[in-house]
Image (tube, rainbow, N blue to C red):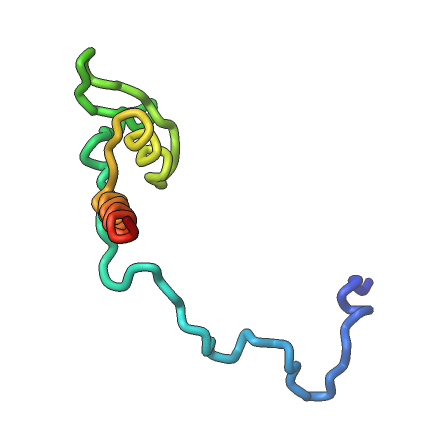
Length: 108
């Protein structure tokens, strides 16, 4: 009994398929946003890992925040929580704000 793939195969008579890129080395270079070693996110300073998720440890007037974010390995939601709830920015975000303020001041 032959399979569907056997019936639909194309005999190329020993010619190489020009569309097959599996044997060719990739000429495309990988681009990264930040060359060099990755910097650890600032969120690790403000959260501790618990069995329930990542718990915010920012001290407020009413005590520790304690907000739990259930997520995998990404830090995006934790960074968003710090920004919105506690007005805490990463060093890169602070630099962007300073650049914008300087640009606005140079316009005036």
